[in-house]
Length: 174
Image (cartoon, rainbow, N blue to C red; front, top):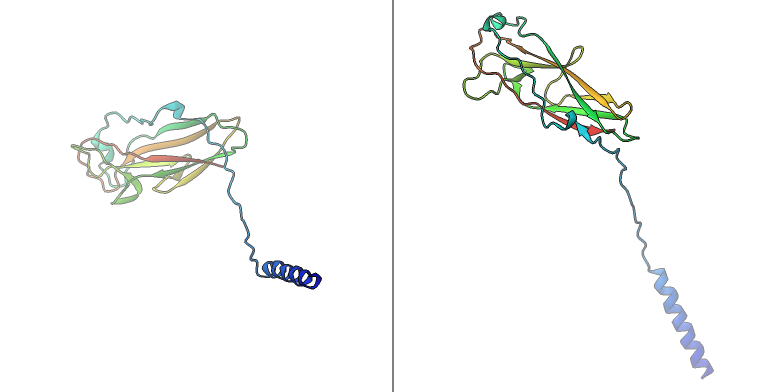
């Protein structure tokens, strides 16, 4: 009996030790990113920015590459930015004018003015086109995005009509 017990214990230990010899291991990787919190209010809570040009005389646009309309300055305020959020990045998207690829297309419906495009700049002179991003620092929980726009005719000889375009500004935070 003693001999049988020794054999049983030896075999049990051998099986237990052999099981560990064939064990596999696996690594568990945990990853992610902690992102800055977004600011709470864009454009004072208004869903859009309207830049009114009013009625303009066609002779301001008759010379190809002429001076066009006066520039209109405007801003998009961003507020309610929490501590740790240091910059706001604004990326612009929309439809560029096919005959003037540095300016936005007049997409007014109905009787749209022809040969008119829209300039958009980050002052003093950084041109904003489709896909352009600008970074503005946040100070005391607030950032002001300065912009300026005017109407322009690269080809001259425009036809009268409405002028409108929609440029989407997408905000991300750093």
